Structures are given as C-alpha cells and as structure tokens.
Amino acid sequence: MSPALPPSREALDAFGLASAHQHELLNLPGGRGLTWRAGDTVLRPSAGDGETVWKAHVLAQLPRSARFRTPRPIAARSGEWTVDGWEAWQWLPGAADETRVIDVLDVADAFHSAVRRLERPDFLDQADDPWARSDRIAWEEEPPPANATLHRLIAAFRPVSAPAQIIHGDLLGNVMFEAGEAPVVIDWAPYWRPTGFADAIVLADAACWHGLETAEMIRLADDRDDGRQFLIRALAFRITTFVLLGHWDDRMQARHDPAVETALV
Image 1 (tube, rainbow, N blue to C red):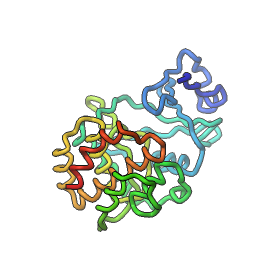
Image 2 (image 1 turned 90 degrees about the horizontal axis):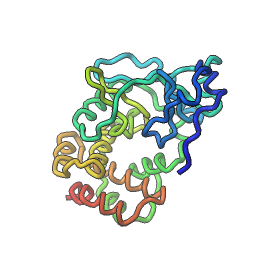
Image 3 (image 1 turned 135 degrees about the vertical axis):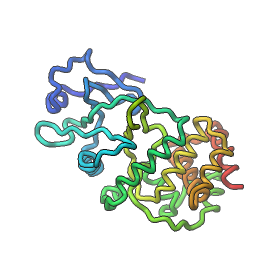
Image 4 (image 1 turned 180 degrees about the horizontal axis):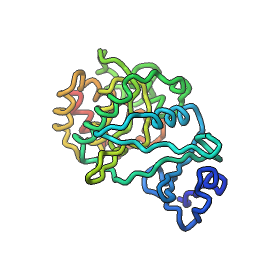
C-alpha cells in the first residue's frame, strides 16, 4: 500500500498551520491511515458534504459533559469547515480499547443522551455507501443481497418499539481512553435508529473481533429492552456491509458464526 499523502500546503495554511513542515506532520493510526496530526490539530480527508457541515456545527456547540468529550471542529480562516479536501479537528489524547465493552456502552448512553433532541438530518436521505445501504437493509428498507447467513438473520427480525434518534453506529473502536480524563468520542458515524441498535453493534463487534464471549454478549443484550432483536439486526448490518464491500468469505463466515448462532438460539 502506498503511503498516504499528507495535507496540502493550501489546507495547512487555511487552518493556521502554515509553519507545519513535512517532518512535523504525524500520520496517525486508525482512520485507514489517512489522518494526520500537526501539534494540537488533527487533519483528515473531507468530502465537504452535508454530513461534514452538520457534524461540525453540532460538535462545535455540544455542551460539555463529565462522562465523555468530543474533539471540537476547527474552522478555516475563511469560516469554511473544509479546504482543499481536508477538515481540521482539535487533537485530544487517548487510545481505543475494544475490550472495555462496559465502559464503551456507558459512553454510548451519555453521548446518545446528549444528542437525543437533534432532528433527523437531511443528508441521511442521500447516503448511498455500503454502510448506509447495510443500515437500511438491517431495517428492511432495502432488499438484501444473496447470503444464506444474512437471510437467516432477516427471518428472525421482529418489530421493536423504541423510538429512533441520531446515533453513533461505530463506537467500539472510536471511544478513546486516557487516565484521569473523560473518554473521547471520535469518528461519528451517524444513523437514525434506536440507541439499542448502537449498543448492539458494540456487542456484535466485540464478540466477532475482540474476544467478548458470546455468552456475555447475550447477557448484555438481554439486559436491554429488545436487546436480542437489536443484536440480530446489528449482525445483519455488519455482515451486509462485508458482502457489499466484497469482503465476505469463509474466514469472515467463521468469525461471525459463533455470534450468529448464539443470537439465533
């Protein structure tokens, strides 16, 4: 894989980082290797679309919380949130720990409480990437691709009564921990679903990829209203994404089978 290109000189200058030389830019782990740090600023590729602008406005004004933090967006000198395909954010220290499932679920509760009253953003209607499509398929708003495991999960779908709101649909690896500080929520993946769906995605990811025992996955799911149903839909969501991306194979099947079989009992 070729090295990721650093931010352009135009972007650095626009965000007040003109003095950041090539050797002062640090390529950060995560974010597909496309994210860079310059001092107390993080720069990442930006589509400059409705989602970018919406998240920047929301997170710039989100009230402070003792239970979690979010990086603040940084506007360019022009007032724009995106310059030359880049956006800028406050850098906050911390590291993800995907084994801290209970702590991530606590952060999820705090974050979703903080954004509960936000209206449904219009950009969700235009989203057509594999993740957006997989979300719609997991909620029977779009026909599913051909996949035997996926169709077993869909056959187990039942209605849920919880209301939808804006959620973060990819929290497990996007909560950073730092001793003595509130956890940091990054890389907001917005969907309009019940918060139990976001929790279930955390549980599914932890069980399939990070060593959470399936018995503990089920115990935590069943502690929540409609938790088993959300878990079935979360597994359908993740499996559909791999199918649509062309990544579903025997290895993926083996990795997901224990969680699927446990959820469908």
